[in-house]
Length: 424
Image (cartoon, rainbow, N blue to C red; front, side):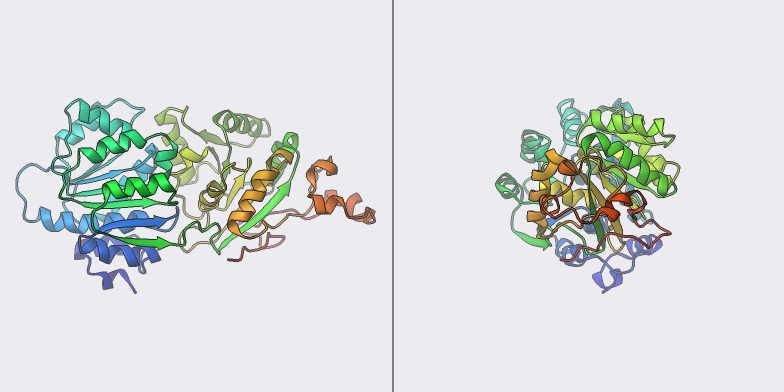
């Protein structure tokens, strides 16, 4: 199936073709016909499956047909609510790309910056609004915008919004929406709170599920290094120095940890930048822009900030800290191997993180492939897995030569010494 088979308006098909897309992803193939028929939709899909296009394209199609008949000042007809500034900006960029050959106008609003520019865009009239919950409610309370004309509404990354404490904001937004509307609800996971929230928002809906809790895209190769906490930065520096031209996204569990990694890498003459909630919006956008444009090869991010990162040909994801929520591992490694691309995800694991590793492997129903020994395994009693500790120490030559062992990850130009490909 191609996008031409879906019955999308010609100007939108032209834009899709210019983006280089021919065949829809599974969620696009299933969701777009439902949405073109103006049905509500519950989509269960993880990051990287193509869901932004799955909801943007049908909405643009409807807005294009409606706009051809409408006259006068534009009113906000479509609302997309998403948890982070980066993700909101990314959705707006995609929305603009798909609607370039139409008269559809969109704008994005989010907190952390002065509101006047956003207010001016709204007063000029827009068809579609992409917003984070806090700034949306703020401008609604000021009387600057209203949701009374909304005909299409999307709640994206719903589980992440609940994790970030937006549940009450989301309920307030839903309460202000017109009764007659088309509603789209997307979430990577469906815990009880998300199910209850979806019931409040959706009417007569259809459900599309794309590999729920799918932990490892088949094209993502994984590897795990056991390493002491004190040696993580040494191992990280070593890996980055081996492939200085590769684009690498590093995950830190905390904001302070992300800043510390950047500082330590700078001491090794490795340029990097951090993005997290404590950084200004200007700093975050500059770092992300430099990373996407190839002017910066190493980006250090926390999980929330990383939700808006969509970089083509991302060489490597490194879990500097293993996440304490196993589903987060899924989202992290999903930053590489997106859509039809392949990718590599490497994780570091210290003694305290062993329980996290156990939970991750239980979720993905496989063992993350162990990487060979590396130069920074200075305390084997704490870094090696239990089953390796119990083996007789009769391989002294191997231990003696561990400094020369191969432990490279496979970069763009190196297909040797690579971690095993995951199997579903």
